[in-house]
Length: 561
Image (tube, rainbow, N blue to C red; front, top):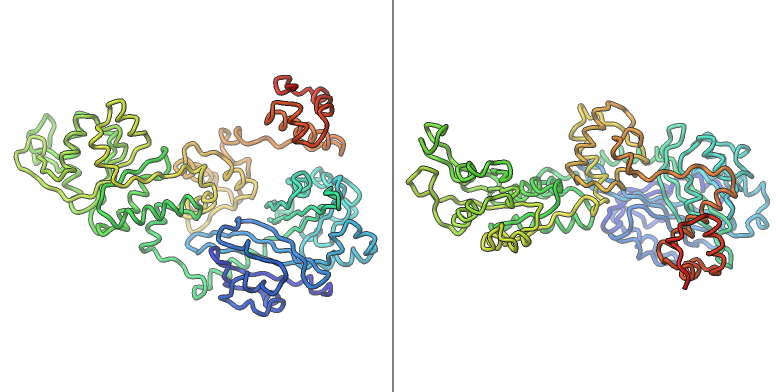
């Protein structure tokens, strides 16, 4: 395969669940003649020697894979998952062919420097190669286009030199070097380019990292691809706001937790049995209740919501069942229907059901058992056909044990119980939720651009307030009225909980010592034993003891057998 072909983009857009091809570039179709729309990538790659069964619905959102093909070539696969509002999520995969000689520890002996430079300069993506000590060996010409970096500035110097020059903020090659595995991360370069960096370590026969090869893709091409996809309604169908999306309005996301929740909501919507929604504050219990109603046979009738914790106990019975004229001081002359009457034929959502006083619990149980009720001060028996959905963020089982919640009412409500996951347990959904909230708040479709660092921070934050807090932060960011948002735009209380970035080492020796100290400290924290830490790090116990003293690690971490 000649150098010119290396410059041609080879990419495909696939469905998430089965990697079925929706769209592919001309060069992808040329090198894989069987890659017509409708074929799956495992089928297309079946003629290669390696098994590609790892391409499945469970494949991570971002990944990289290397495999030998065509004799002396290496095929590098990279993929990412794209989720856009009202558009079916899809995977973007690109393919790059490289001679296997550049992955060899003896690459310099096989290709002379001039030939290797010509080869790397012919590649459209940015290429950055460091050795096992972090020293830059090669940088191709594309890096000047992508990041305004020329080889003369960085070759022969430690890779952190470019960080000191403020060219970029995240050194992905060092991440891969330290982790001893392929690492893919998004990064914003100083010139405004948004890129995906995939760094892959190369090992010698002893298992030592001798090189790390980084491939940097300018995502402008991906943005162009997204625009093309928006016009492909015949291939990638938009989901109309019908039955399926009504569920998504309450359960937005594609994480395993969201998929399980969506299935549970769908099953519950098809029945008329009472439902108990459980979950922390802010997990979306109200939206889930509305989604159940909208997907149920009662969707054309009323959905009435009552927050049991917001009504004084003296007025709660009249709110539930209504009152007649003259029932109490201040009552309306015509009386007022309660929520049971207002929701007749539809759905009644009782939020914070745990706050219901015991006296009202007895009356509610009476009505749930199919018995008639009377308005406060009334004499007429009333029957109401309602579907009950209750919600709480408290443990009703513990309240039953303490006698603060009726056991018979608990069992009557818990015919179908649905646990809503906390946002920290479904982090994969945060990008979808962010896009949804920004789109819903944006005027005339004008929404800000979020830097990858900011998105990563939002995805890693623990969100004690769950979806409600995320929506509040989105509203805060929108109020800044910026076209581009970065990590520094977050509120101080979130920034204070973000992990602090370590300072850039002054030298290679400083970087090695910082890494060594961190690894020993972590091993001692995990094992609480110098003997076990030495075994974990595959060094002698005396080495651990000596270096722990040198780095002044806390004595409480150190125990000797």
